[in-house]
Length: 196
Image (cartoon, rainbow, N blue to C red; front, side, top):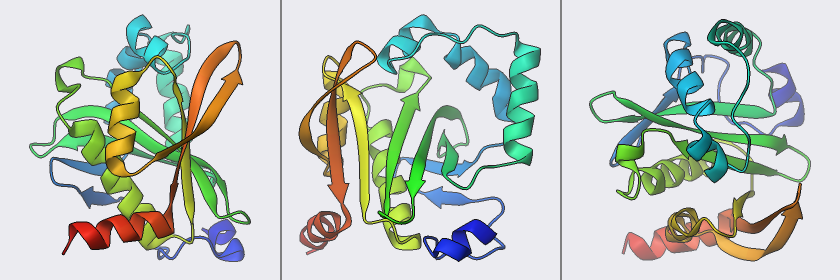
């Protein structure tokens, strides 16, 4: 928390240990050790890894749980992770904002709906909307951005529904991505229109 205060990017209090943020279809909550086995299953799934432009992890569950415990015990100030749950507390995915730059006031977003039964049903869109609201209302971040594979039409459609705009193509590690941005000012205008 000292780092956040020093650079004045977060408006949250020191008491913010375990967080729950309510969306319309989902809730976001702080990660906990009970998530580790489910996360491991998703991280070793080749189909989900391909959507995420990564390769499945190649470590044992025991090693993964050990890393997971360390991340919970020693969180880094430039990355904030949440579990995505349905309203009846069923874990369906993860969302994070990371590479937080308190000088430029920007951060990148990453999301995965790990439970494939919940894909294309608005859960990811609501999670993105809920996280963007939380970030813009509780931090000094002015820009959220993400990179999605050009072939991932479902994700691009969800990001556009939330208000992200395609900025342009990016080539990373031999793959083609689209960079998409969401400015706080644009976000506020869209929300004002939707609330009137």
